[in-house]
Length: 91
Length: 230
Image (cartoon, rainbow over all chains, first blue to last red; front, side, top):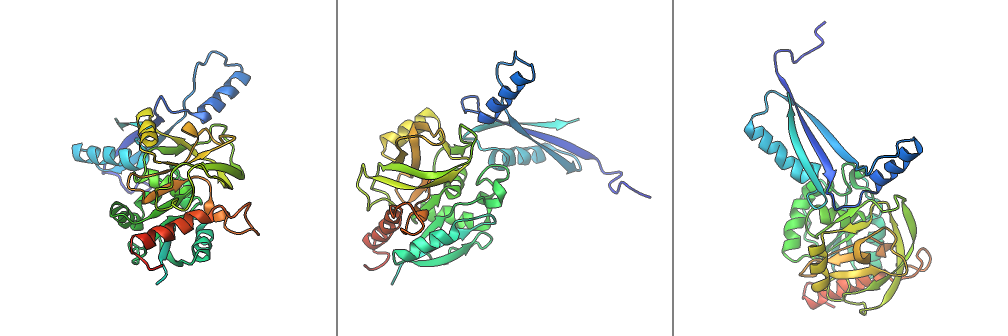
């Protein structure tokens, strides 16, 4: 009957995108690019493959929470030696 | 007293028992260490074995670095405890920033499994002191993400300080920068290597017994440091 148990509690979505640094070779992206050519898309100069993490947060995301997520993005979700990341709060 | 050498088993570790066997073959005592137990049980050295800890999810070694035992291991590493990371263990050491750089997807995207020739480049580390510089060894290599990468400055530092312990020769199997197969930290107690010395310790199962040198080196360094008696 009551499908949404968290009605009344705002949900926030935080999206963390992780990509290999430009100077790091991306053999997976290169393999995808090879397939694009076979599918008739021949004007792609480069493909870089990354990862996206979508965090659904109970409640609001304040500055402290955002800092905490950025910290986790730089320690767990990405490896700063080879990857860059961005964090966005989805409206 | 024989040296007590711990091998950490994570969910998904594969080569922990092979490492244990190598330790016992050279006269050490194997101590089983568990990822969820934040205690190194007074071991004299630690091997991080090969395998696929936590299914290699996220990145190889990325989740293992947050295992309870790892906090103790990082402290112990900084205190000089000899630590050898093999394959996935090497990946865990770089993820934990105990060694610089990172291991990435093989440049040709294929998983490789073959006997690989290496040249020993440094015999100052706790794990390579029984080799001659320039010695060529043949041990198995098996990985999908073994390409060693680091920025040019880090690579130059590794070369300049003689911290490359082994290099691939005849062919570079995975696109590793400067043919690097293994490196050491500046104090020489922490070593990571992508190929598997613990799979080359007996004639019956390995291509050679060249891998034994890593484990006899450890025993020698423990004796020299007065940790155990000869």
